[in-house]
Image 1: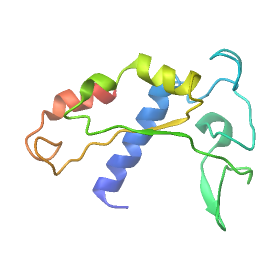
Image 2 (image 1 turned 180 degrees about the vertical axis):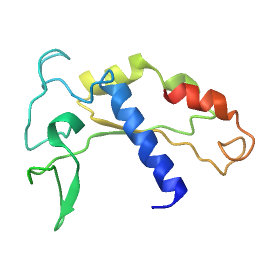
Image 3 (image 1 turned 90 degrees about the horizontal axis):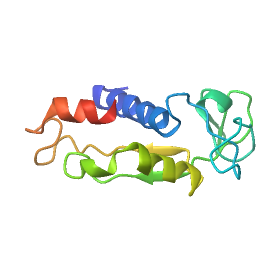
Image 4 (image 1 turned 60 degrees about the vertical axis):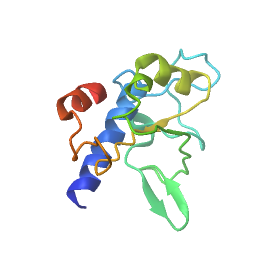
Length: 127
């Protein structure tokens, strides 16, 4: 995996932790955001599904049970940092039953992470 791929993976993990309040566990669906995390054939959660991998054409958890990723992709966080916040992530989890957020960085674009953007501000944004 290249350096950019490693960064993308780290950002995805940071997004999942942000969505889950740092626990990696998603609340039971239909619980209004409260309750224990549960294993289902549907949404994945890192602390429930474990490491994900592909078997044939299905994405599965460590136990081999199918999982489904539901979520969104942000626009470039260098340009739209206001949408990276706890309230937005909570809404994605509780109202949309999301379990993943892709934080798009566009590192090579104008004022991106690698082309003149404020690296320290971006790092702080995803912590």
